[in-house]
Image (tube, rainbow, N blue to C red; front, side, top):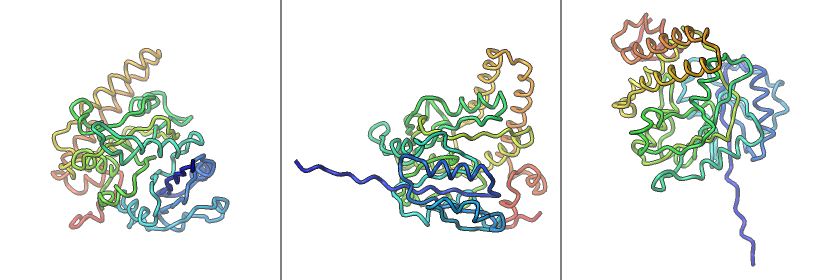
Length: 323
């Protein structure tokens, strides 16, 4: 009997890069050791002056494309990177996400082979984010809250139970079916932030597709944001939601934030770290205020928006937006 051979799907990894450091070098070296072959690594570097070719000469399948800071956009630059790919699967990563093992790419590819409820096609699969060694104690719980040990496939049927979490996905490390991506027109052409959840929301809400969370695909990635950094991040997050009512309208996310605060406090009590609770409450207040103001950004003066945002260059490109 003749053996039937199946060709593996090809994979490209696309990484927006800004001010590359040793973390990016570590990331690229970990990608080079993956058990599932990577066809090309496409780096979309912001500002050519920051890139040092000699630091990455040993990465054989790396290609670099440069954009200016003024040209960079969370959705647009990733679309540009995707334009250089002809692979079956595109894995988008950020330059500070380091593969935890050699199985990252293989686990993401496997997750894309699943189907959701009623046979819905999985078009994107995102990885589990583990805390870095220097991650704050309370933030460690946030990682486990957002990225549990249990994989899942999410569809429109989950909206009533999961709410906004149905659309949750992260381009920190996320694989996309390239054919479905092209049919969808890629990421929204211009967005301050949150291009991954906007894509997921459209896929689930309007295309009848599914999103997978692959808990066995793992990267190290975390931040120790202060109160104002959390405020600004949530401000930009809410701006993206306000700009895309077709995706987020009628789906409240405040309840999910409240649940996280309650769960974090309970966890700190169980870990006998109660002195950390006031900091969690204060930081959560900053998150909530940033979110509320971001949802109402159209009623704010322009100078105040520039104070509140993490991404001033986005606003300076906004038509009619003068400083």
